[in-house]
Amino acid sequence: MPKVPESRRIGRMAVNEVRSLLERHGHIVQEIDGANDHGEDLHVTFVQDGQRTADSLAVQVKGGVSTRTRKGHRVQVGNHGANWRDGGLPVLCVVHDPERGGLFWANATRQLRRARALRRTLKSVVVGRDSVLDDSTAGAFVRSMRSYLAWEREGVGRWADMADVEFAPGDIVRPFENDCGEPMVFWQKRGEPFAVLLHHDLDWEPVRIQEHMLRLDFIPSIGDVILDAAEAHWLMGCFKSTEWWRRPVEQSGPPPLSPPDP
Image (tube, rainbow, N blue to C red; front, side, top):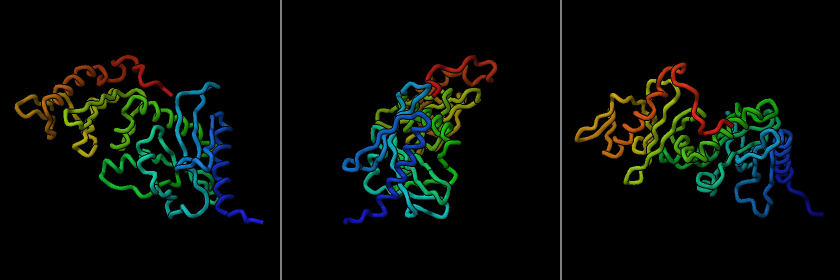
């Protein structure tokens, strides 16, 4: 009789562990048929208080020791890089390694976007040993991913990934694109006396900025950053419309309604 490959058993065990955990916490998990598996094994939709949410993502699951490294695991990107980075759903990589404690996860979409910002080609997704996914961490994991997906819907999640920063639900985040198609983002955290500029030309490295640094001269600039006229006037509008959010927290009023709290 035909022998069943050991790799199949290990792979099925890994997928079942992920599915069982998420379903145990009430979420919807749809397995992708093996014949249609092109880099994602599961589609997950999060559920809140028994109601299906708008928050969905895809998961690539790996099992066995082949992904192990000294500090954790690595999942080969192969030819999935463009789809995982630019697809309609963010993609997570989850590794099942029971000898090391069970399930471990990483955001493949975020790592691939950051690599592009650094002009690098990512060959494998790094899965740290501290990124444990189990019953005790499932709640925090879901909250984190739903917040991430909320910013995706706002159209600014990509820029957070490329800059390797995380926007909080109460932050004010305003994107802009100049006439060359180069994006930039104004980011204001509640109660902070400064804002942060994320800019394509600065390789997305966060730069702290304040209104007094803005110059609308013959060559507009903010600090050491040269701007064009449209960028400078956009930044001025951002500063003027968010002045109240830079006040101390007790003076700034209630948090904004958008993006929604997961």
